[in-house]
Image (tube, rainbow, N blue to C red; front, side, top):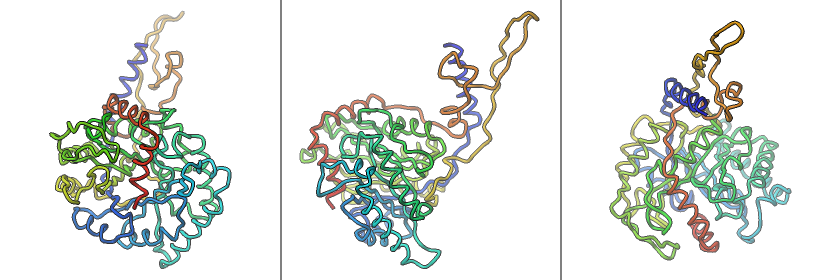
Length: 431
């Protein structure tokens, strides 16, 4: 056991020596009120912020076809932004139906194909060579218990690959970036976000949704950016080190927000002494210093169950946001398809400590390339993979906030199902 710890310590030290800082190509985007229906809200966000949104998040269920998206997508493209379509496998007319399973069995093929046809026709309205691309965030927050498609890893993976194949058959995968998006804390039965991963060949972006809920619920407390994201980030980047990361939904409550019972909020407002402005500054510094895989940040810019926005009535933190995004680090152009999360570097080979062994010929030295093993028995045969490989090309944040997130997860699990669904679905389907 001591030998294993020694090897791990050497690995981490060597990785820090060879780690490269991510290049300054992180972009910023937003969700704005009325999705993409209103140019006014898009223009207002762009006018108030130091950088225009490179992508705009919009929500759509399986009860809507492409016709309902074309206006929104066109508005977004007209502002030199990329539509980030959150496509929810949800049937408004039958809210209890298990659409994610129905997709895998082919019951939604006609709908999916008509959606694809609509996307194709919409793209063809643009001059050749200028046809827009989209980002598709399918079945987001699958590791939660609030959406009907949640807590079903095998069904999600099967449905994901099924939908992806239909886009491939239509020749559209080159213009669609596939965004695999988890909640920042596992509120499911599996507690292993990697169980939902459909495969490197069908995913372009890793993504996390995370919020600082403050003390507005009895099971939440004010959380820093690291406390909100470090745990899930490390899990995902370690498991899938070749993918860029997006924060598809991120925000902090305002300290002046008070618990609103109509949203099921039963907290104590003990966060009134905190600062959203300081939270934003810390977030942007943390991303630059310790989260090099993050290549896109999409601010949830609306005041709904809490005051999440930057530039609406009563909001704070806009100046701090603008100060941060004015730097070159956040000047990135959004890539649709997978790009390396960090600049590739030659993976270092670290010699293990010299170990003296005795044989018939007496003492001899034995050296070998450093290996990280899962057990002591294979300590000298396991290849350098996983955390060692990931850390060889990037920095990693220290994981903090596990207790806060565990408490939050338990509180969500204990929330009445109807109240939880109304809260989480209501915030995205009641436009």
